[in-house]
Length: 623
Picture 1 (tube, rainbow, N blue to C red):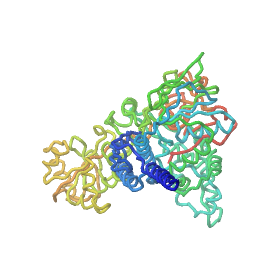
Picture 2 (picture 1 turned 135 degrees about the horizontal axis):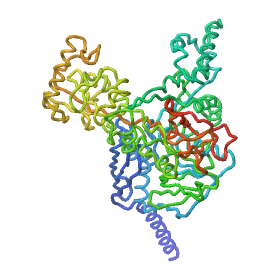
Picture 3 (picture 1 turned 30 degrees about the vertical axis):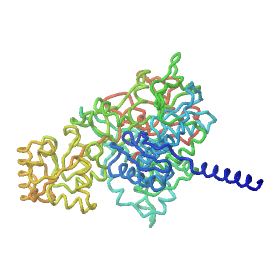
């Protein structure tokens, strides 16, 4: 009897174990989560059975086409195969990958009944509050941490990096040991003599004269190896590339002191980043790309900023001012809770550009007559100009807000820059939304920097026939059809039908194409001087793809001094307020003004780190 009881008890225990093992992993049902991606929300809907992920539907309509959307598709299958959010991100699409996997993890937690722990909303205090976790913000945080300060970093996005994270991450590299082993660059130096010293105002003129002397000595040094790259050469290159005119005819060029400071500190910055594992690949003569590109650089800076408390999905809304001094920031978290962050020492604004704020771009830009609030952005959605708006509200001066740089993309970001460039090359002609040509449509760089910005909404429509389709598919199999599936391209049997699909006037389009075909026959463009052609538009099916100029950089912003203090409209520092990064990138001055723009790329001796050169004039994204 005892043996029977024991057997029954053992069996009961065994059955109990089986019940535990067989307990449901998930509560069956459908769950949804949304996380901010590169261009907008990435929405994930997942269906669960008791013990498995059954299906995933992921959508990121505003993610970069050909990159972010591909990452989402690949990760969908990877998560299904792994039955987990613990899968590798897709290289080159870190922001979209992070958003996708964060949303997946949220859905899994919902299905498991794991409630996300919500922090108790209270006021928080640190020595330094940094707004923005991009390259400049993390540099500022690292500099302050190095000086013993406590730091809280607020980031509106759900990921680190900002625009720098999505860039190549290129940095100025003036390693003279490397230059000494390089091939001679005599040919590259020939252009400088032709500039003439009258082209340059002081102190640029002094640098130019010094450079000419350096070139002369270099030509006569008798060495078989070694290239000439000096601080003066970099300075003159910046002057030449940075000079131009706005729509009103104002001549602008870069601020000498800020550029010089950045160039002189380039080697110190490079050496500092090497302490955290920086390795690079040469890109151009004095420019290098970090391993991992922009996000690789951000990872290094995140290591450097170890000790800072980073609050993601927390958007700063306004500055707190007491007795004329900025003493904190009021921010909003993902749940809409408003939190006040108090700063004992100061607030550093590093919120990036306003390139993703179409209305703000349209309000200020002075580079094109056609750019409107409809302009897309080449940067994360978080680049909305928050720091500029907050600082202006407390009296900060804004300068050079009219200067931006555009990039060619697919209409409303439906194709990445590289893809848009390939469409441009394959097309036979380019028209605007009025169905007329407006420039030499073989010259992409000029159209992007000049004529394209004057077209309505910055929209350019690439037109061709079967030859264009063949050229697109030669670049990537099925590329022409893929662009149609995205909603930015069309095919038709006649030009009249094509006009209807693209919203163009049919009679005007037909007349434009007829005139263009005549130029192809004559091998000369009587209107715009085009010399080379991709053939006549005559062999259907016809093809059209909508391209658009996207805002890549905004160069205007807050005015700072050499201590990175934000200046008011009287050029007086606003106590407790500092700024760094792209929104202080302008460094442009107008020759008919006495005021100078004192913006720079990065953080220069930020608050509580004034003796540190580690983050001084942090130089990124200039090339």
